[in-house]
Length: 261
View 1 (cartoon, rainbow, N blue to C red):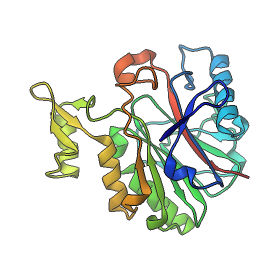
View 2: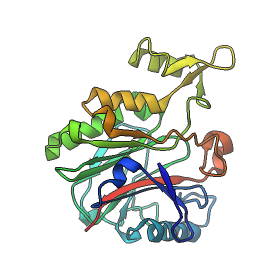
View 3: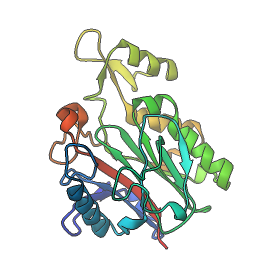
């Protein structure tokens, strides 16, 4: 992943997705909050999203976001829904954690403050997806479900899918109790790379990056097509927002993808 300085809003791009000139994608930085909340003036968020759109190269009015609920729900969206959740919360796609489209000229975006953002692209069928994979979504195999939706609805080949796993809470900082650890131990039995002992007694550390990578591999995505940012949102207060570090006052950064018109 590489950092770009365009306009007044620094953002990041993945090297594997940047190889496709027909594609637009980004991961925003923590310089500006782009998540609507009751604690922030919505006009500030609107301004920040417009700044991001100008920097990353998409029309903010063509942005689509969803109300993320830590589910495995995947929604196919069309150009007719462009603008939903772009400049307000009320018009968001309801109760969805992954957005998929085969239509150009719209940008799909998920928000994060520790959860794993995953961007997907199938270049032959020209289908993109933006996935919000918190620990619950990861445990529910949301990336697998997203690839399945791409495959069944658009004829995508998982072996052609290019995947980018974005900045989020790393194993270094994602310390959980026995109940959550057991969920991942059952999903990935014997895999200590994903579930290891924590720093405190009775605690465990979970690697959500590796869990999502393994899930992508399991549904047929090639290892060489997967890029992992490897940047912990908790460890980098100067770069990303983090709910675990900041609590309720944490802002949100975004990961977006779309095909150019």
